[in-house]
Length: 504
Image 1 (cartoon, rainbow, N blue to C red):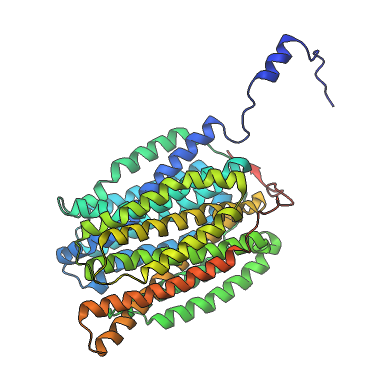
Image 2: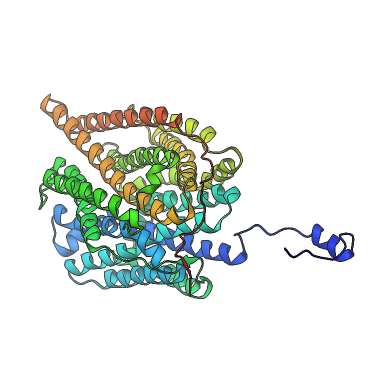
């Protein structure tokens, strides 16, 4: 062992002791990379959420039915479902810089193609290309945080990811409504293009080859089973909501769900066999951690409630309170901003106190907000809707950052990429499930009310009441599960796999 022979009381030694010690893993380079990744993820998720308001103008422009134009959102979701499970392998096989440039390049190419689309199939293809890039970005961001940010600062850093997840969907409808009230639908794509190009240029300059890569082979059968499993489940669940709303679907929802469930069973069995040789497409060993499993279950409940309410609130505001799309966007905007702005604060509290003191009250606020939503009817004031939505958003914010951070933090470093892929994939399934359940219950409740002789407006309000009643039940399940959350111990082995090689 080498020992420094200089006396400890020399001026040089004293100066060295007084100098601030840099935080490991939080160099200027890492901060720049995280900043670029956050901007890129924000732009991508914003673009994902603007399409809902743009569908009616697109139906008119291309002379389409509602069932056909929905493929712009369904195709996007299906692509995400196919690509995200492979991100665990992608993030191990390729460097941070390569993955970022590839994802951003795909997104920009899809955006340009969408803005220039002259026929509807061209627009659908453009959305698929966009989704291919978007699917990689959030797992890349989360894996980068977990790999390079010290545990003591992970909470506040993950809080910024909450801003991306929350604020982009919140301002998406208002942003899209503003553009469509003044400009062509093409500007919903053109408006984000300069920011995306700037992020790509900055990333190409600033993002270096962080970390290590591994030579992992792609198992084609696993990729095929994954595509059918998650694609079938998400398509089936999404179609279930559309079918309940009276829209025709090319493939029966229950057939798609059944095919997805069978393929998922086969996919899981194959991954359990392949992970013994460290060759799984999606390594399932993260589920051996109790903290990861409980955290993911709670996160899925929260995501289902979030997306269910996000799909239902605009319908309530437009069909029951008779607001236009721009006014609807403004009503949900404060909640999204509250959720995003509270993210870093919640992150700092997590770093100081751990997940349990945040998750338990957060789940209670979530359940309370969903309970208040059952009071909404055709006579409710708009300000009351805003207050409830802000409460809902704050409850979700207090849940999401601690759950994501503690779940991934319980894993070994070599499982971070697989853990983030599992989390992102299941969030897509939860979003589709929440949407399907809320829409189906709303439609069923409205139909029953109409059959009983209620007016159409009252029937819509009754259907929404039933859906939010189910949401309240989901919130109460989250409250019960929150008492199972505890601060995870450091993983036993927090080192990359032995065959990892330096990035080039």
